[in-house]
Image (cartoon, rainbow, N blue to C red; front, side, top):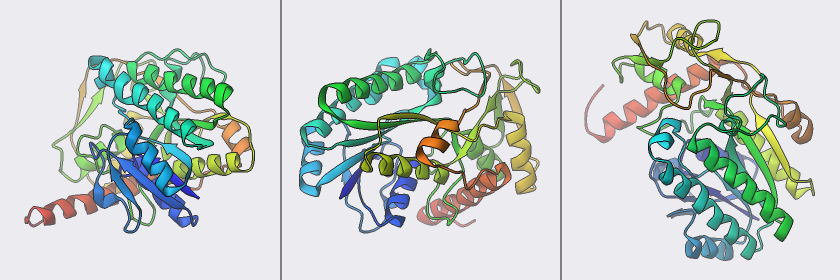
Length: 335
């Protein structure tokens, strides 16, 4: 049984590929390499460069490789960009997912795992957020993902496609064995940016907004380690294979850290007091959002293994250093 991983050369997707390989599965990777890297796909894993909405290509992959499950990560994820380029996000996140779902149905694929986001909740009225919270996304990014959730629900009712939707919060860290990490040069994740500031790759770290109604004025977020997140996707696939019902779950640790707390943790881990600057708020950023995770623990028997902010930041720092050295070697420069 093969599992198609869209976006499998990217940050979370590459960790999913490792999780599948570690479990003895056969992953197939489809990625357009806009933010992913060919070298991030392990040797021996079939790789196809292209769009997840390319129906001819996806149909051929499903047919030729006997794909029985799809884990869908491909898409655009930067909230602020979605505000300035909404149609681009509805194209990449919504329209292409519609085509992918159509291919799954026509190709006889029964199990579909979709990577959604906490952004579907918008500004939650209470934290931790449960899956029963009203869905009121405040950004095109969140709306584009919510539309995909609706399509899966409708496709399931009409065609029997079975799904697990995982709404995850802020992903951070790297593979504990050092095999993968966040490698995109335009990444906007706080922990990665803090690692870059600690290593001097960036001259300073920017805080966007210091006047939020939180204890220190900066945003509160629930940071989930990337391998723990991949394990949740694997648990979702197992759930469906065992005949489990359609399921929507939050993925997070039910614990929040402020932007300033993350920065101080990186400074402590790295031993470097890097410069920090403050700016105005970014559009589309809620003040606080924390995952209620009772459902994923109960329904998928998921237990976090890496719920430790200091270890998460250390993983990110180690990976960023390795990545920086790799790029220097590739360009022929020295440290």
